Image (cartoon, rainbow, N blue to C red; front, side):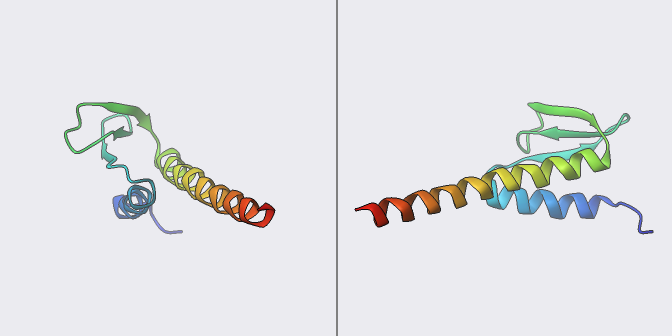
Length: 83
């Protein structure tokens, strides 16, 4: 079974930042991973997250933004169909 690495999380974070337009960063702390709003690391979003929790957070954020885009496309298509 492969070992979880920071590279996997960094890849997921990069994809999340690209899709959402955010500039989130994380680091490994003594009690787990810490998620920040930007590079300055002055505003902490959450701390003490496990690897799986961080991975899930990034994936869920992407899904929310991807769903919003899909919803908007469907709404526009329906509006054009109605008029």
